[in-house]
Image 1 (cartoon, rainbow, N blue to C red):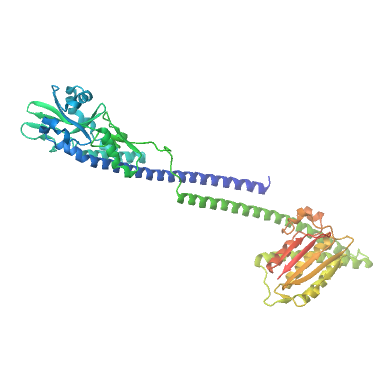
Image 2 (cartoon, helix red, strand yellow):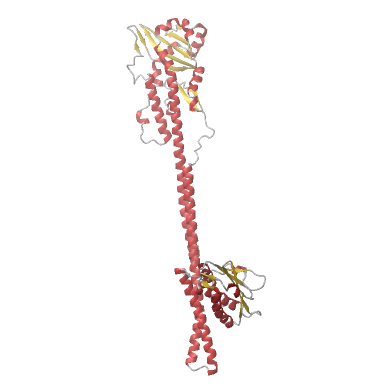
Length: 541
């Protein structure tokens, strides 16, 4: 397995681990955000429920107070009081232990059927307040560390119910000396007005003692009209709720937290359209997650791209070192061998000039290679500094063309300069050395890759338009294949094997030429032509 493959696997594992951790944190963040929003929603809803219960309690206070304040003597002539009944009171009644009922005749039979045996009614009245209105133990509801927000809210509602119970005066233990329960005079004792359900009838009654006689006095409440009236009190709260009787006393917190203190009635909420559904994620959390994930993915992509570029550059540089080693070995071997032969007198005098010419050619080749490498390193390190004053193009091209003609002639090629008159008055801020190096690299490549073709011309076409310079270098060789053109301008693109099996060079000349062109504000491109061969175009200005 290559170093690049191992590095890629380690990088992908690290990215996967990091993204997994980020996904877990994001999921926790979403869950906490939803839980917080749900808790806030529940708290707001519970506040609405508490407000609804207080409103109904407040509305019931006058009714309960009037009945509690009614003297026991008022029950002796109930028939004459029927016209004074409110819409929420069906009738008032009185009964003793012997079953002697005092109530309006038209409704007496229905009342007896609802209440049943009077003796059991007396027994029930004695324990009724103890059964219905007993506060839960404080330690069970006052826990400072509730298991959930819902339990904490429920405990608070139960305490609220207990407080309402005390405020209404129905908690015997809390208010043992309440003036509404006790001796009205030396012979009459009146108990608490206590609400309870007898079958489906809502009764509000109390125990009364006249000397040695005991009575139960109270009224039969009209539950239907009372329920509608109470619900009207909370219409503005927009609660989807109803009122339901609590027939048997229940100490369960979920019942007491919704129960009225004045009546054995609880608020029953209708189920929502999506029960148990959590609220959506807040806008802040969504934006935060998008920013975090975008940043994380962007960072992972940037690190991956940087790592890939670094590995690629490392491999290209390794290939470049291998190719340079090969390119250096050939001229150095020639130098050593020819120098030894010349020094040892092994070369005939007639061939010495040929050997010296070969040494000069190899020296030029070596110098050209070193010059490109140094120029590329210098350009990467500190860039290119352009002269302050524009440079005249015509004399510069005449000077450069002499060197280019020599290079073409060395490769049995012919340089053809076309259109120099078009730049006779053109001057640009360019680096003359950089321009010369670009054109020399292009002509050198044409000499190497188009060598041996029938048409040995290398065209150097010069044009000027709108104070800009355009130079084309074209040969009549085999041209450049499309798959090779994609990586033509990449530095260090040749390996040792490619350098050995192709024309001399390490694949740095074109990369250097393009960078020099860009440093001067121009561009160097390979263009397609209808004629065979390669054509490069340099645009400056």
